[in-house]
Image 1 (cartoon, rainbow, N blue to C red):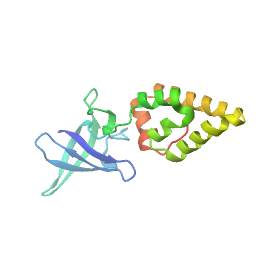
Image 2 (cartoon, one colour; image 1 turned 120 degrees about the vertical axis):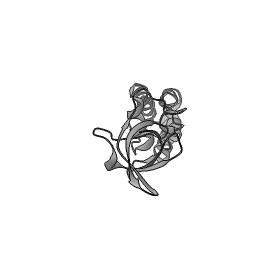
Image 3 (tube, rainbow, N blue to C red; image 1 turned 90 degrees about the vertical axis):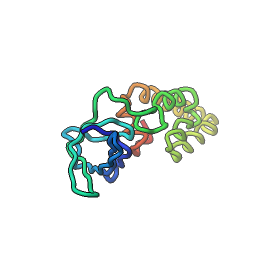
Length: 157
C-alpha cells in the first residue's frame, strides 16, 4: 500500500502515515524496512498495512525513490542551500547557527565575530570555521544534512 508520512519523531521512532483515502497508520522504528533509518514528513512510502479495528499499523515501510517529499525536504523549512550561503557570507556572526536552531553555537560565533577581531586570530579562525561549515552544508546530501543538522544535535562541522 502507498501513503505519505505525516510525521516521524527520530527520538521515539514513532510516526504516522496517511493513505490517499485518509486512513492513518501508526508506525514505529521497528516497522521500518531493512536499511531504512529515517523518514521525512511528506515523504511517499510503500508499506504493509496491519492491525485491527481502530489500531492500524504500518510495517515493512520503504521510501519511494523519486517521489515528491513536499515543498521542502522533510517537511522542514530548513534548506541546506540557505544554511550554506548564510554560513559562507554571514557565518562569522553565527547567522547560520541561529537559522538551524543551534542557538548556543550561534551566540559563541556571534561573540567571536564581534569581539574576536580585537585579538585578530580568534576572529580569523571564526571566519574560516564558518566558511568550511558552509562548504560542508552545500556538499552534503539532503538526507545527511537533514539528519545531522536539522533533526540531529550536531552543531559544529
